[in-house]
Image 1: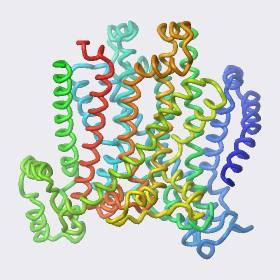
Image 2: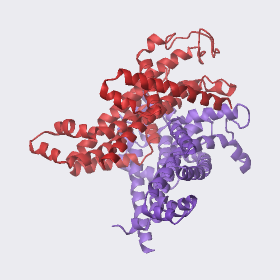
Image 3: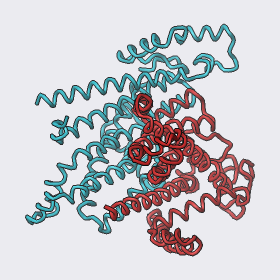
Image 4: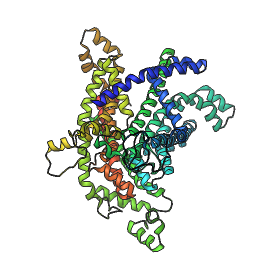
Length: 307
Length: 317
C-alpha cells in the first residue's frame, strides 16, 4: 500500500515539475527549437528533464558527492542520518556518494558502449547497403548467425572466454549490439541508396567515405537517432544486469547494478536503500523511452500529414 | 494439406541449419582466444609440461573440426562432456536444473500469455480511455525496468510481510500446489516483465486492423464492439500476436537468468552465472547451446504457426 501511495505522489509531483521544465526550455532555447519544445507532451518534457539531471550529476559527481567514491567512512549498514543521508553500504562506504559516482560510471560506460556499437554497426550496415553483392551477403549472413543466439546468453559466453573487465565488457556488449544496429542501418540505407542523388554522386566519382558520410548518413539520421535511444536503454539494462550478476563493472568502482546486489539483504529487513540504485536505472530508462516515444510519434505524425 | 507439409519441412530444414550454425558459433567462440583455452585456464602458473598435459586432456592437440565433431556427436547423445571446474559430467549437473527452469518458464508463460491477450484486447476495445492510458503508461514503464528491480519490489511488498518466500527452496517430493506457491514470486516477476510487450503488440495489431473496410462493414451492420474484435479482428491479428508471444517466450529464456539469481532458484540460469564467474567454459557452452536451441525452436514454431493462420502467406511464391 505504501508503494502505491508513493507512486501516486511521485506522479503528482512530476506533473508540475515537467510542466515547469517545458516552460524553461521554451524560454531559453533558440526560436525554432522552442517551437518544438512548446508542442512537447509532458511525458517527453519529464524525460528531457531527467536526462539533463543525470548528465549534470555525472559531469559534476566529484563536486556533488559529500564523500569520496571508494573510502570507508563509517561502520557497516548505517541507517539514514544527517552525515550519511542514505546510510552506508556493506563495507561502510557512503551510499549517497556511491549513487552519485554511479551515474558517472554506469551511464558513462553504457553510453560509450552504445556509441561504439553504433559506429561499427551503422558504418558496416550502410556500407553493405551501398556496395551490395557478396560483401552484403557475407556480412548479413554472419549477422543473422550471431542474432540466432539470444543477446544475454551470447554476452555471457563471450565474457567467460575473455574474462570480466570494463574493457572486455564494453567490447563484448558493443559487438553483440552492433549486430542489431547493423540490421536497422542496412534496411534504412537500402531505402536511401536507390535515390537519384546517390546515383548522381556516384557519377561524379565520389568515394565510399564521402557517400556514407555526406549523402546517406544525413538522410538516414532520424530513424537512427530513435534507434540510438532504444539501443542505449537495452545496453544500459544489459550492463546493469551483468553488474548485478557480478559479471559486469567490478568493485570497488561504484556502479548501480552491483550496489543492488551488494546490499540486497537489507530489502528483506524492510529497508528501501538497495532499491534506490535500481530505481535510478529504471528512471533513466523510462525517461529515455518517453523521449524516444515522442520522437517516433513526431516522425510518424509528420509522415501522415505529408501523405 | 500437401503444401502445409512441405512448408513445415522447409522450416524444419532451415531450423536444423540454424542450429548447426549456432552450435558452430558457440563452439568456435573459444577459438577467438589469444593463445588457447589451456594457456588461459592456467594463466601465470603455466609450465610447458602442465600446458601440454592440459591440452591433451582437453583434446586441444587435435584440429578444431575434429573437436567440434566429437563435441556435437556427444551433445546429440546427451553427453556434454565434463565440467572444467568440478570434473563432474555436465549432463548430471543439468538434468535437475533444466526441469526447474522449464517449469518456471512455463509457469510464467501460463500467467503472462492470457493476461497479455486479455489486456491487449481490452485496451484496443476501449482505445484512448483512461484504462487504456494507464495500462499503456504502466506497460512502457514495466519494459524500462530492469528485471531485478521488479523482483526486489515484489520481495519488498510481498515477501517482507511473509506472504510469499523470497528464496525458492525446492525439494524433489514437493506437491504441485506447494511448488506453485514457492515459485510464485519469480514467476510473477517474469510475468510482469514480458506481459507489457505482448500487451502493447496485441493492442497495436488489433488497432491496425480496426481501420480496414471489412471492420467498418461489420460496425455498420450494427455488431457489438466486443464481437467485432473477437470474431472479425482477432483471427486476422493472430499472425503478429503469435510472433510476439513466441518472441517473448524466447525472451523469458534470457529473463530467467537474472530472476533465478535474485530468488536463488536452482535452475540453469544460476548455474550459468556461477560458471561464467568460474570461467568454466564447458558448462557455459552447454547451457548456451540449450538456451539457443530453445530460442531457435520457439522462433521456428512461431513462424510455422503464424503461416498456418494466414493461408495467403502459403500460396504466395
